[in-house]
Length: 245
Image (spheres, rainbow, N blue to C red):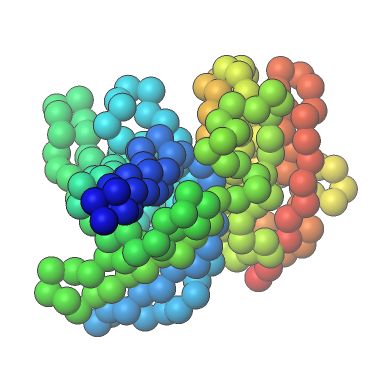
């Protein structure tokens, strides 16, 4: 009987160790759906992405971008959007830290309980302190990026999301090395519409947002457009997207 209990105990420990997760295991490009129930807004099964990457300045959190307005504010892209993991509480936190040359002005955090996590699929739920708001995320590691393939041998230009889109879309990118990088949008005639980014980028994950405007910040018409990735003077990749009106 004692030997049986010992075997069961050791089996439990082994399973726990195999399923244990570290902060770095969340790094990657996640896709899925979100649902929100609140006094001011309600929706179900809305598509989303979350790109989480290592923070070169800290081992205590990851940095992230997302198209979910509940956890990410694109108008505050100057703020630090960070992600932390509390293993003992089985919780994660999406936070924003407002930092200026004068110091930290404030911090806003949303804590989520981990409902399910098998290393590839992740289910999270946030319930506000007053119980009136519930936000849930059901996401999976994308085949575009995964925590197993942190640094590819070649740069990877991802598909924009959403596509078709109106009024804005996000373009994910993974770089294998630090280099001058340009992402540009062209129309079907090959004319340059917008340089979304033109400058030096570090290796790792990046997401760029395009709001359907040209280099003069004027709204462009609906249609088919192409976005190109250049490194140095070399064209790396081209993908198609559709702007709706």
